[in-house]
Length: 431
Image (tube, rainbow, N blue to C red; front, side, top):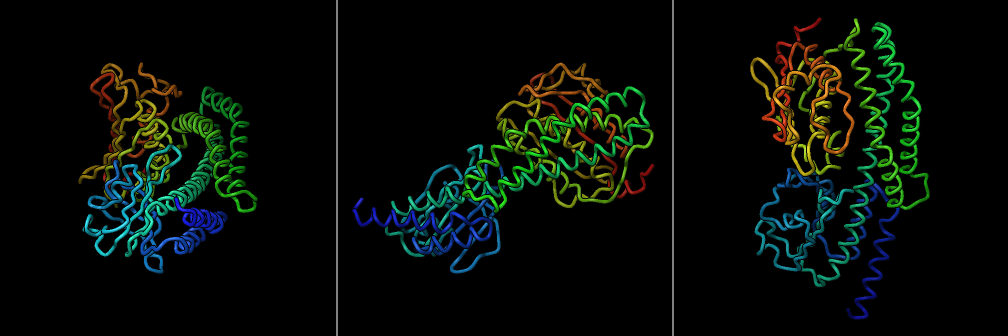
């Protein structure tokens, strides 16, 4: 590399570091564009996330074109250089972009890099397009790699922020549910009362510790800490990883045991209202994405928008979360779990299909009984208390519906189906 170009590269690196190192959120986007314009001739800047598995389209998280931000939009990847970037490649096309990719007519130069999540999977891309050719392709690649790392760190910081908020909300929900179930357990028999008392006693201290760690994550991600954004994200992510397995196991244990107590009590909590089932399903799937990703399992969503239903949203969240959690727990790495919902004139069905260990025919009828575990074992050494499917059955029954299971046998996966009365009928179903 010529000496003057090497000096330019050094100055460029310094400008990038100075221009974006201390900014996050919208301020980061502003600093990113300002710095890009100082070091490259850019006409269009894209930061996207992929849609589909594998990605077939991209949804912009940030878009800037010729001097101003652009409202977010989605576009098909086929026939664009972005498709190659989503394949994991860094792509630089110095000139004649429109000739090679007619969809990009009007642009001459392109440079794009993939964006990875903390599991090192491609989840998005960062690209710059120019109406003029890029005179120095090597320098463009260097700049984009540096910017790409910074964009990646910012996206992971934002993701950690969301994970932290979800974790805190989940723990608060557990605490509130614990208080409610303490009251409900007074009406239960001595077995249930003893079971709840032992569980609450054994888990109070771990839950307090988890709450403290969640607050520590919030501190790391707060602006009052005098550390670079990347360092704060790294520390917060490490802390979250340390508590995530414990928090999930504790929350599941509390939920299972307390729901068991509540479902047998004389004053079962049931607060029906009309709500959008499709949004609820999307939320539950998103809450399970990270757990699935640790086993390289993909949760495929197959339901339309606007599935309105009359029921207790919290209870149905518990039911679907139990089914998804079981599917992930009993599936091998690299498989797919499908969450589907369909609506007919008479009913709404919610199904969870996995490609996991399966269930033998003589155990199908037993798995919905309390404290019943099939002979199949979780694939990742997870715990199973034998309450989850019994809870799903209780919730479905409380809504006037039912739950069923099907499997072609061990090693053939399983499908669980919750059938509920249609939204127009459920408004009349109240006890």
